[in-house]
Amino acid sequence: MELPTLILVTRDTVIQQQILAHFKKTFQLSICSSLEDCYEQCRQQDIDSILVDLRFLLSGGHQEDHLLDTIQAAAPDTEIILLTEEECPEILERRAACTSMMHIKGFASEAELLLEIDSCLNPEEKVVVTQSLVMNAAHGSSTAGSTPENKTLAKRTSPANTSHESPEADNEHAITRRFETNSHEMKLMLNELEIAAQHDVTVLLIGETGAGKTYLSRLIHDVSPRRNEPFLNVACGALPNDLIESELFGHVRGAFTSAHADKDGKFLAAGRGTVLLDEIDVLGPEQQVKLLRVIETGEFEPIGSNKTHVNQARLVVASNMDLQPLVEQGKFRPDLYYRLNMLKFDVLPLRRRKSDIIVLANDFVHQMSLKHNIPVDRIDEEFMEALHTYPWPGNVRELENVIRRSVIYCREGILRKENLPSHILMGLVGPTNDPSVVLNHKQNDSERLGDQVAVTEKDLIEQALFKNNYSRTNTAKTLGISRVTLYNKMKKYGMNTKK
Image 1 (cartoon, rainbow, N blue to C red):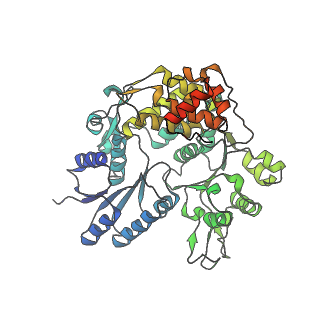
Image 2: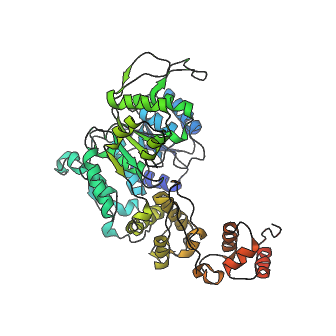
Image 3: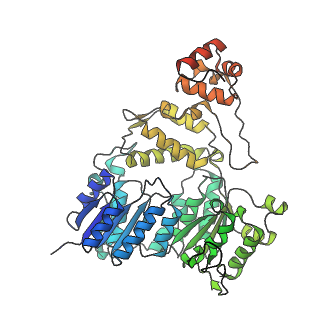
């Protein structure tokens, strides 16, 4: 019996090996390093399935989107699975939502990825947890605090062997289970959000950038009856003001100068799924009126069209600042504010839930260790202490990126405070996205040069110069050294001494 064909498009050799080992008995596998090569193969033979790895894009995804369109045109019956980071380029998100293409966004390990691919290629089979496959899928990877006892991976079984628990019961507490927090205030909010998420109502999330609003929005979608429909994220703040309406409502050909063809907006593309409108505070007065109409009646017209459509998607609205001051300033409509404020949920910044820092850090270390195939066997207490002390103006997103950098520079399987960026160790705090919040960090004796053994002298000097507006006198005082010593050290490290 001839096996079905599967093309894997990736340059990741680890993923190649895992997929070859896992699917060698069920698929005839072919490896391509580019979408161009994949297209050539699709022209030469019939392909059953294609897995495209687009996790590490350096561009906005437009070229890849064009090539995917070409492949779909050349092989319309071929099943395509798209693999991206959790924060996927909007143009690829749209293609996945508007076509039959399946989309896997982010994964913590190769083992988890194999499960996701299995689900896409064999949707009729059920999944239960087993431990026997995990050693094969995670072979060669070490993680902090990981043992064979706490690693699990799913395998395929027949429907008769599955659990009696329904998907609805499994999703009922997905938000409180998957959004880890030790904050009592956050737990109360999540319990209320979980109830609202299961009903067809518009939800407003307020929180600083990086606090977890997008992740929470995805969880809201996952616990709702719409979980099998598309989830689309519209970053309103990233769109030019004159294109926001087109992005939301769509347009017809000739509606404006660059409208060369009809285009469906997000409300139509989402179908019966969920649309996240992030940074809702940037919308102008006319756009706010149209949004209020969509929330109240579901009705809207694409730009340049007289045809009225009815939105069937569920709306989640988010902002990185409270909307009430904008109402008082005349920048936000009171009627829309009161309509949204009935189901408003505040996502606390990380500095107001300090007890979550260590838990999140451990999770990120585990994820990054697997993702980058760098073993982490132990974490020094000083490393965690530095994380706990820092106020994290960039919130969870900043913590994740700091952990990523630290794991990349980890040596001998031990995470030390030397692996942290110098600004974390020095406590140099940048601004938050909310202008009303000022994070003061007072100078203390521990910032003197002789006490900072965790980072190089060059890093310390560069940071201190920046902090003191490149005044060598003030920089020398900050570091506890003379101006002559500072000058000699700057000369030693090849730094500009003429400022």
